[in-house]
Image (tube, rainbow, N blue to C red; front, side, top):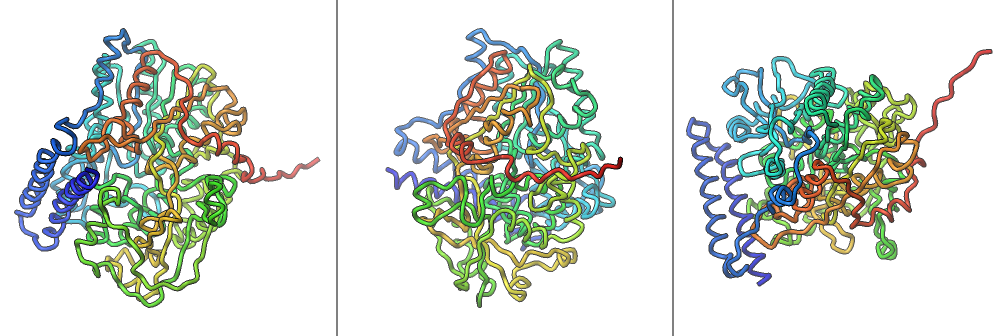
Length: 632
């Protein structure tokens, strides 16, 4: 039976991937007006195949039981006597809300006010003219804001956050359950933003923090109740930066206006995924959206083009890992290492492990499309166990976080290096780490340095998934000059991108060392490691201590173990708690609804976060305050 499930799942993945990449092939071969219609036909055929496989196998594999939908949490709580108490404001996360085109080049004129991120128009424009789409999505390399003649702005309302694309829900299931409890657009709102921007630029360009302040005030005034904030992913970093900004202007704002803050899957200490994206334009799933992210693959967009795109997004800098070796370890040690790993000489500490490519040349196509497509299928679903195909030198170089960051800083060059000072909080760059210059509100907030507001009646809930392997370290090949040139595109602007001699060793697999597709993984939600999502919230030197929480905000950690539902659900079902899927997790939704209805919850711990707390000194890596000279 397990084999049948594996084969069934593999066929489903193959059908969907075939639909997507057949469309990509059409985009290379066809340039006429019927391209989009042909692509729609291919995708429709792929969906039909998936449906047919589901119907043909469900009786054999699961005894005729249909896939279970999310529980009617809202209706159940309403029937139990619960009702809305606090108004809610949602701050969405990275890449999961829509961006509308308000000004563009000639190639994009027909898409005025259409969402070129977060809708079917995105796929249409991408496949019809990939270079045009990339040009419009890339921010100005020096200012980090709008390029000349191009203007994206965040789409507004729930239509901007409910689905990423048709069929790929983000906030929709939670919105449905909130509505079942009794919420509507009067007491439930969202404040979207351009998630590409560095946090200081959100206020500078769009006055986002000012609008957020006014929206909270309005909700508080209309309903005569404090407001509950829900943020997801990068939205947590945005909202904590807002708290830092508003507290500097109005020290009592949080205490007077906020009942609770639900930090959902927030990368408080950053994500290693951002490191690989900025070094070489690569992650396990480009942009963190699973199978949908694979449209930005080498087959369609060169690594140089992707690297240029990611380095233009100030938000990507803000997601680089925060803290130094005492938190993230070094080349030989990590606080996440288990005794068994230590006995085997294996560690999660190296952020960057690399070898030089000796004599191999471009091998992207050597195994053909079938091997390339199947490489995206997890081995748990019947995908291949990959082994290295590249001849490499035996000498291996291992670098901890600080040394790896220095490689990235050198590779990125100016003006990126100057931007990193204000748009990131990097221990390897003292000017960026912020300890030297305090916590100015015009710069990115370092969560290890800058305290929360004084709001003793407020509750801060850290809500995140555990049990889903998240990226922690990377095995790279360093290509020689000829190899790097052969594997890249020829776009004029790509010539300015350095560092793409680096390439993830994606065919490297070593089960004993925990390496798959060239990646080291650790406990997390599939995207954010536990060390980032849960540590600061649980640590007495973090948000449970006086230095970073001087007002005594009540801190609660709520963890949701990741469990795939035994059904043909590409998103994992109602018990999945990976980075985006947690928003539709039954347990999470019930807790969220209980909070907004007036209940107060306590810690629910299912991971080893307490062991991490015991091993890590959060203050060990902080740089000393600069000495100021005194005159008598």
